[in-house]
Image (cartoon, rainbow, N blue to C red; front, side, top):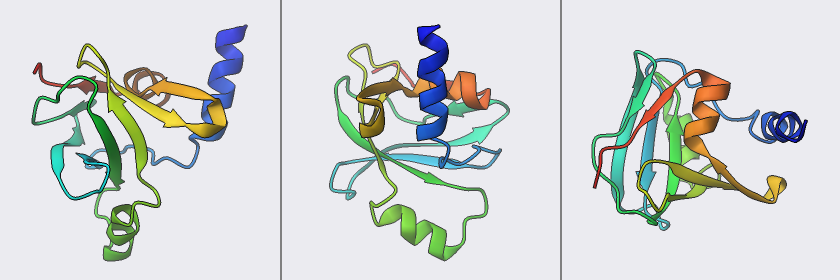
Length: 124
């Protein structure tokens, strides 16, 4: 029952996130948005990042829909829509902060359960 309530709250909180259709690009960048640590594009049911990430690294997730307009890219790059997260201690997940949930959320679990995608992070 608790898990069901949790996922109801998650779905309400993150309903504004993109559908993650094929071609959606996700960039993991520094907190100041200046350094790009890794990027990935949704392809064949996977969101596979191109670079290994340091465990416990703080990141921002920028999500660009497929064929994003210049305005959509500018909005994502402004930082207003950037999600705040951290690479898990094991380096195999992204732990995203949603203040509305009162705690972190596994990006891997959310992608799998809400979008049917597999998150792939190369080993450091």
